[in-house]
Length: 199
Figure 1 (cartoon, rainbow, N blue to C red):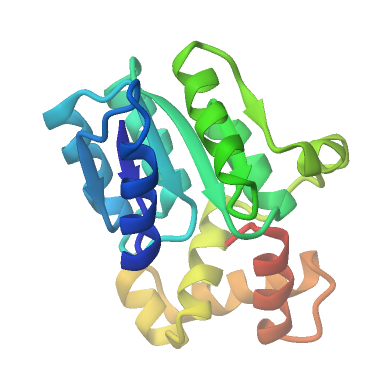
Figure 2: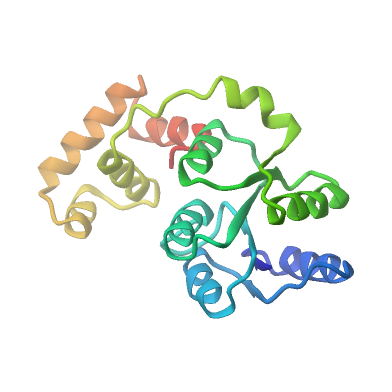
């Protein structure tokens, strides 16, 4: 199994906990989404347990999608501290095999890993109702990209430079985002999109 968690204490605790199970072996433990695919390609784990929120250019969900494309034999179980509907939607779109809250008891995590390894799909019971009422993300992929950069504090000129568009185009995207989300301004749009799990 591959484990990806950016917080050192949590990663170490999970490695220790899972190492106590005779049928579970951790072949790699990484701290960023960017390291997931290369570690998986080197070690060929049966299951990757990935935190959703990790630093780097790839968060856990983006890493899961890339992992699915490049190593389809590796099944994925997502861990998150928050059951945001947008995260669940992205996880389902990425084709992950399991989605579990970090507040779940350790025995539930171990059982989920075994189920995912055995070909089953796992959804944290507390998220089952959320799965029925997932709102569609009204933003385009480019609008999400622009809003994510704005959320990181980049101004229109910097976003334009990074995306190879004009600053006016960036402002147009941000205006469209504010309108689509019925937000008061771009800060409010960032809040709305973040709470929904869209960025």
